[in-house]
Length: 342
Image 1 (tube, rainbow, N blue to C red):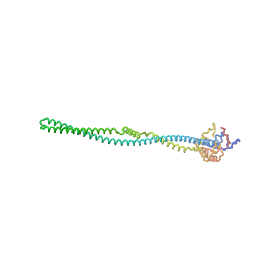
Image 2: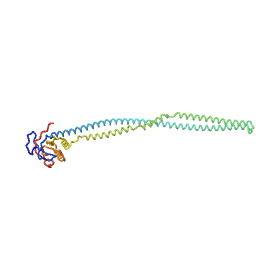
Image 3: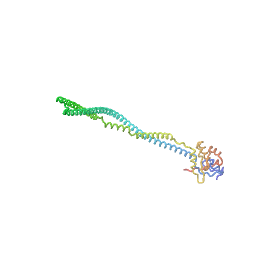
Image 4: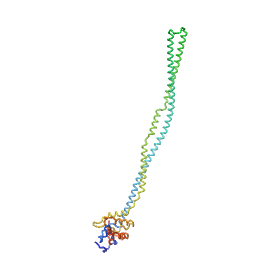
C-alpha cells in the first residue's frame, strides 16, 4: 500500500489525483491497477457507437425503401388489373346497351305481331260463329223441307198440283240459299284461319328474343367479386404505402444518449483479479453536461462497485471534493500504470 502523499516513480504519464467513487475515501491509496479506460478509448467507443447507430438507421432506410418499392410495384400491378377490369366492365355495359336496344326493337315487332294475331283470331272467331249460325239455319231449312214433303204426301196436302209444286219450289229455294250461305261461311272461316297461320308464321325471331333476354340477365348479374377484391387490395397497398412513408420519415439516426452509453461501458469493464477498475481521465472529452450526468450517476448508485478515477480535470475535482466521505472523494496523487496494448 502507498501512503497518502508518498513518493511516486518517474513515468512518461503525468501525475494524477486519485478520485475514489463508490466505496468512500480510503485511508491509504490502493495499489493502482493498469488503466482500464482512458479518454481516447472512451471517445473511440462513443464514436463507434454513434457510427453504429448511423449505419443501423441507414440499413433501416434501405429496408423501408425496398419495402416501399415493392409496395409501389404491387400497387402499379393492382391498379393496372383494376383498370383492365373496369375497361372490360365498360365493354360489357356498352354491349348491354346495344342488346337492350335490340331487345326493344324485337319487343316492338313482337307487340305489333301480337296485335295482328289478335285481330286475325278475332276475325276467325267471327267467321266461325257465322258458320255455326248458317249451319243452324241450314238444319232448320232441312227440317222445314222434310215437314213439307210429309205434309204434301198426307191428307193435308193441297188439292191443286200447282200449289204443291209451288210449295216444293219455295222449300228448295230456301234450302239453296242456306247452302250458299254455308259455303260462304266456310270459305270465310278458312280465309280467317289461313290469316291466323300467316300471322303465326311471321313471329319476329322468338328464339333471338329469348337469347337477348338471357344475355341481358347475364350481363346485369355478372361477377363483381374480382373488382371488389382488387379495390380492397389497392386500398391495403395504399395504406401500407402511407405507413412506410411515415416510417421512412422517422428513420433518422438514433441520437446517442452519451451518459447512458458511458455508464454501460464502465459497467462492462472487468477489474483485474482482486483489483479495482481504473479510469484515467476517461471523461475528459465529454461535454460539461454529459460529464456531470455520468459522475452524478456513478456517485448516486447504491451498492455500486468501487472505481478509481485518475484526473487533473478541474470539473471532476470540484465535483469530487463535494462528495460525502462515505461515497467518495479525492484520495491522493499517483502516476498511473500504462494501459496494456490491445
